[in-house]
Amino acid sequence: MKQNWLFDFEEYLNSEKEMAQSSISNYLRYIRRFLDIADSISSPFDAHQFFKTSNIEAYYNSKSGSIASAVLSAFADFLLREEEINKQELLIIKDRIIELKKPMGPTNDFEILSDTEIQFILSNNIHYRFLNDPGRPDDEISIVGPAIWSLALTGFEQQELMELKLGDLDVSHNYFRVRNLYKGSDELMAEWITLDNITKSKITHYLDHRAKLNSKYDNLFLFNNEPLDNDSINDTFRIFKRAGNCDKFKNGGVVSAQMLVRSKLIQSLKQTSGKCLIDIIKIFGMNNAQVTYSIRTYLANSITS
Image (cartoon, rainbow, N blue to C red):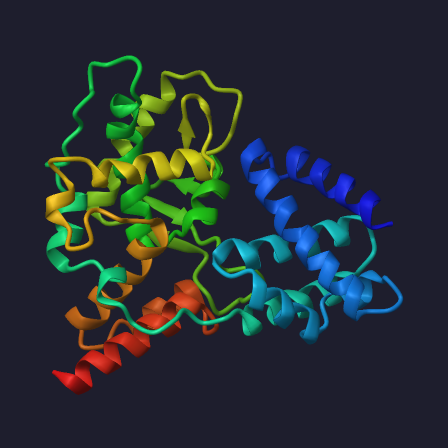
């Protein structure tokens, strides 16, 4: 039974989620771990028993990060398609996945980018050493990278960046906004996130490039004419560790989408003295680990300053 579901889940990720093979491999590795836990704790091996609190907590103790909860959510969607669970059960399961997600660890200054570091990432001063070298991806990174980084600063983590489709971007009727992939079934959360002028310019430049590719994919982000995956996202972030860029960062240029999300949240809380919290919750919801981390860090800094 377990092996059959793994095979069908792989097919589901490929055909319905249209994931890159590297992402599918990561998802399968994570879900195997979850199923092993469920198999050892639950009896009988039943889809209705998979998402018990004890199973999810044990899974989160061994697997952390945004991909861990994304995998559980995707597997729950798959079980709905297979009619192993119903829609009401799906909503309960997804709420539980979010509620039990482990908060991030204690504040580390190296995990939070300063305002100056954020401004550098958004600037046109990034150094691309091998722009004219066909053996290096610098030319493509110089176009795709800024769009990815600016959307991460808007709130999109690595998994959400990979999931975005062209249809999730609305540039009609004077709008320039992107669909809020965190919304789920929560009617109180915003459906769309309006993009600021800097992000708009980065995305527009990327879309001009993308229009020339004549791609068969409907993913918003393509890298080397393939849907974005963990490896290609990481390629764009590695540019900050290069000579000419790394000295602009206190941690030597170690940057990730998750770091950009929480750094921007903390920056926004500081700049508005916490008044932007309602707007943050409208986008991320009440049970987002990044929001919890950012609020704790903001409050801790407010107390000590």
